[in-house]
Length: 218
Image (cartoon, rainbow, N blue to C red; front, side):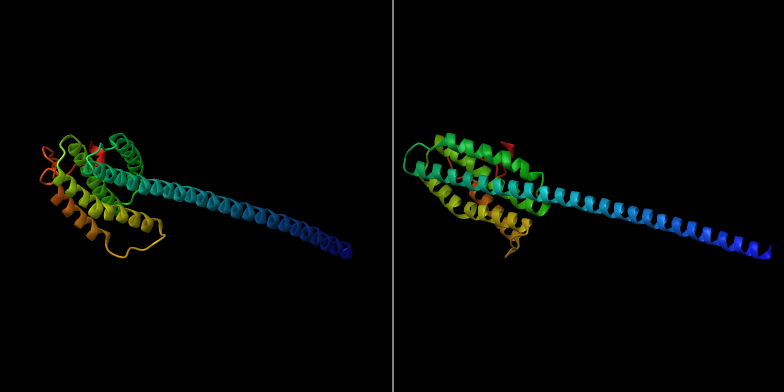
């Protein structure tokens, strides 16, 4: 009888051990699956976030490229108009208006994504281009050789450097280059040159700009 009870107890322990091992194995499998699922979710979230960041980088690069191109074309057409006035011929105002329209549209997009320090630079460049535009229109109506010559020097000097500065700060923000000098110093110099250029009516007869007319406010 005692031997039977011992045998039964041993058998029971064996069954319990087997069941326990089976349960433990199943729990380990379930835990492994949960861990795999969690890892998969984290990887998927990281991939999704990286895809979003990549899209944002690509959009930013596209807007910056368009902004740089639009500013360059706008400045070039202003320059072409001044050269035409120097020759005594008609300025291509229609093309100027088209380039200005494109610039304004792209600048409006850029304003939404430019960091504050870059926006300060872009805003001053915008004022310089906007003042130049108004001056060209005034000179089309009131041709003054001296004023045209002064505006030509302004476009060849400070405005040309301003467009270069814009390209530099955009490239720096994209992380493809480093700034050689403090952009704020160049921006302040541009502002001073703009005020000096336009405080007396942009050097054009009957054309007073007040010094602070940007492309977006016209």
